[in-house]
Length: 308
Image (cartoon, rainbow, N blue to C red):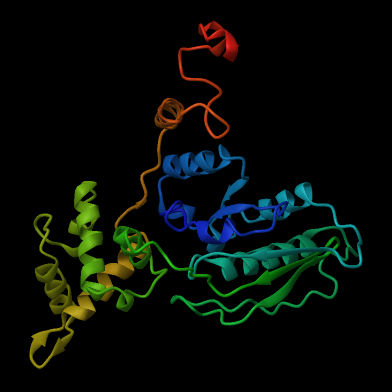
């Protein structure tokens, strides 16, 4: 998810992949962050040696580059078997939507391409199952994307490996984006809503003030959600039902109606260079660190004769 490119990365899974596995990182929903942040996130991932693309699968934007990147990286040994890919990631980041978008683009290219082309010959229009809540895809399914060349994609359920419990903010971010259900947190949806409000205020992103028609920003999430519930006319036993206000506020945030927002800090090129320098200075010389201490040379050291 481009709104949290580092938090939503499944490092626990990629570390156990078989050596030689070709990877392509897709930052989906990139329209929900600013173009500057999206490009900086993509570059930060590319700097690690892993190819990365920006997509907005719900609008078929950037998805065509996935097919191109895959064909440039891998050449099928047998045309009859074709190329097989697998989409893996956290729940509700748009994996199935990416597959459906690729299929739509293939049918569109066939329709407006040369007469008699067999780009989607034998390819069904059956879409991958999608939904607004995590856990919509329950089984591994395969979909054929095109016939010439033959391209197949495995759609997988969201993979949620155990997260580091010492980093509670990571789980808050995942809940804020709808990747993890709010009920899995001890504080529930109210805590997630409070966290989103806190992050918006810290970034001085006050579009929610205009969207709600309130006079000024607030950090009182209970008063805010009660106000939303009252404005929507959702009452229970004569009182405004705050749960409805929480759901509305989180839905608006996730749809980008409070403005583009990235929950992760994306380092600038200067910050990355400085971090590399600090790492170089902090690591001792040896097989795991730099060849020598910064500013020194083993060749210039006056070692004892028996060590030289």
